Image (cartoon, protein in one colour):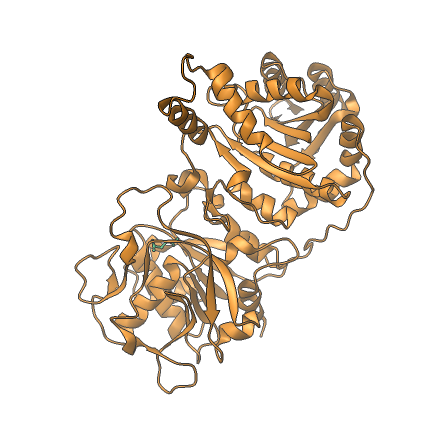
Length: 519
Ligand code: GLN
């Protein structure tokens, strides 16, 4: 196994994930069997319990793992499905070491960071297969939590031979307007921190707001102990899907191959959207802290060659009268009602759904968004006043959305939802069937509540039947999707199509959603 290790310096959130995914893609193109691993030094066992406002979306893999959103970048860029093996957190490492200690597996020894924790980390890294493994270490060098992972990697490079390792350090160089210059000092210091951990970089990737001048790049090379040629400047770009192309044109695959003694071809067939249609799409949601909170949904639209949707604060819509609502919402060509947890903002979502339903605006509800579509329909069409999900109103007279039976006994929050890929049947004669062109599909889930079909069957009809009702368009043990057949696009899905979109292969539901706006 050969390794490309990606570390970060100066700041987090500068695109280490995109860089790692891009390098992996370029290397995959050359014919290598590439695998990826994201290391997250936080103590959470997985990202499932983390607030999307701070940390961005929780990405769900086929095998039901709640991952850091970087796994989404890997899937989209590489076109390969990830699994729980592709993410390691400090929480997992420590719990497994402590568990082993309790089982008596280290009997007699004092359990220590080195070697026990480092061995645990190394064995997790070694358990991945492929010819080349790209390992991205989350956070920035110097973080207390990250230190032990750098130590483990340093040991691993010693065990397996330094010649099998390529270290890329991704940093940020700020531009100081007052003096008109790029400031490389924080980068120099982050490289020093890295070297203090016993790792010297083979390449320094410098992120910056604008293209850097040669003089500043030279300085980075000098202080970083690498050749000028091995400093790569990546200025900000609106279209991150350019990065693999840029890296390929900089011959990064050749540099890595040379260092790792690999033979690679110059093959490169990366195809991504370059022009963007102006469609005004709103994601009605409540996580406004970071654009990353709805990452996979946003990318599912962007990868179709449509401008990125805007996030519309569902709280803001609450309490608006009809003319105010129409003033705000009529600006949009389509609405996506976002997934989410907790009561805050749901009435705004319901108001947006009502507007879209009555005004024939294309609307796609995802997970909580779909549940609120059903609630809206119950309240405003069926006349079930006070209808709700028992997640928000446990005493509602119309529990249209209710907790799954098997969930009622579960008290722990982490990793206990209905998670991961599950099979569903798509009902013939529905819009969804036209979209999928198939009778079965596997989709990824992350929820506790579901449509209470058993108690309220009268709300639904079969395709072709008369009357203004909801059509169930996909089923498993649960209702998986609903639609209104007389509406141009009113589709709600209990699952998350956004997690399956890849570059060049966006989920067909988003394609259909965008398509209908063009008509
Ligand atoms: N909160 C809802 C549930 O648990 C929806 C979850 C979601 O949107 N991912 O069922």
